[in-house]
Structure formats: structure tokens, C-alpha cells
Image (cartoon, rainbow, N blue to C red; front, top):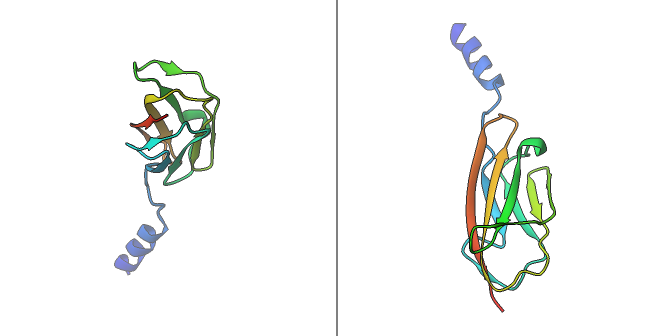
Length: 110
């Protein structure tokens, strides 16, 4: 009886996962033409008030770009990017309230 009750409690507990970056467009390390949109897809929905991303130029200087967080996606909308190296730095908080962060780079080619 105790084993059955324990199994029922464990099965009813929510899974505690963290919001992890699953993919991005452009992809990490890619060489692309100037993108109109940078999209980050996460493993679970994000808490918009505590999640975001920024675009950095080759010198590490933040670039002002419109951004939005919705569902499991963070979107950046850069204007025409000049050829060169760029970095996206992100942070995401899922429903479990654990903050995850990371970054990746890509290169814009002529």
C-alpha cells in the first residue's frame, strides 16, 4: 500500500525542467547574409518578464534592436547588419523559475 501511494505521488509531481535553447536562426557558428530576424527557440515556454536577448557587435557593444519574448521563442529584429562577427547573448526563465543563460556567435557575409 505504501509503495502504491509513493508511486502515485511521484507520478503526480510536475517535471522540473529548465528552459534550454534548442535552436536558433541563424544557427550558432553559421555564415549568413544579413538576417531580418534572429529567432531563438527554447525547450519550454519562457516567462517574458525575466527572459530576453541582446545582439552584440564584434567589439562586444550591445546593438539596439527590437525584441520580443512569446511562448518558447525570443525574437530579435535587426536592421541591415554589416558584414562581420556578431554575438547573441540570451537568458531564459521557464515556469520552474530557474534562470538559464548562454550565447552564440554568427558571421554576416557580403
